[in-house]
Length: 233
Image (cartoon, rainbow, N blue to C red; front, side):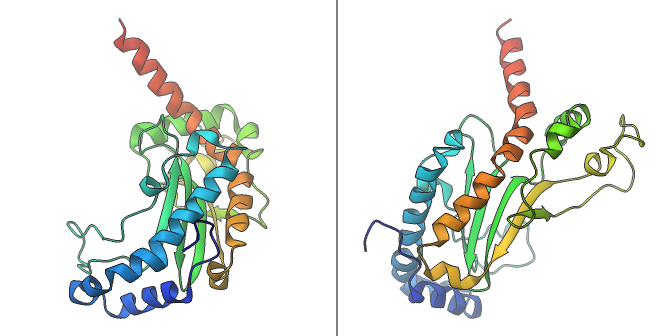
C-alpha cells in the first residue's frame, strides 16, 4: 500500500460493518490482518498527512501518528456493554506539553459517517473551573474564536441546572459558564472515507477551531506553569 492517503479501501468499511454484526473475539482474531491493512494502515497515512498540514496552525499538537490512533479494543471494565471491539476507527491530537485533560482535536471514521470535533470533553473539576474563569474574564475574546457554523457547530451542549458557584447569574457568558463541555463538531458524509479529499475536509475544520482550542488550553497551561513555579521553592 502506498504511504500516501488515497482513501479507505472498500474492504475497510465492509470490515467495520461486519464487525458491528460479529463483535466477538472468535470473529475478529482470524481477520485482524484485514483490520491492520485496510483500516489501521490508511489511518496512519491520513493522520501523518493531517499532521503535516497542522504544522501551519497547530504545531504543538503534532506527534507520532501511531500514538494518536485509538485502540480498536474497548475498555469494558466499567461498562454493561461487554462487546470487545469498537465499530469505528478514530484519532485525537493533543498538545504534547499537556496532560489528557487539555483540549484537542478528534476525528472518527465509520460506515455511518465521519465525526470531526475539537474542544474540551469531560474535564476534571479544577480544569473546568479554570476554563470557566477564563471565559468569564475574556468572554468577547472567547466568542471571537468560534468557527463558521457551516464548518463546525456547537456540540454536546450539556449544562448545569444552576450557575456554577462563584459566578454571577447575570454574567453575559452565563450560558457558557454553565457548560460541562466545550466542543465544536460536525459529521461528514460517509462516502468521503473512500476519498483522498477527506484529509482536506478534516484539516479545513481543524484550522477553523484552532483559536478555540488554544483559548481553552491557556488556563490549563498557566496552571501547570504556576505549579512548576511553586515546586521550585
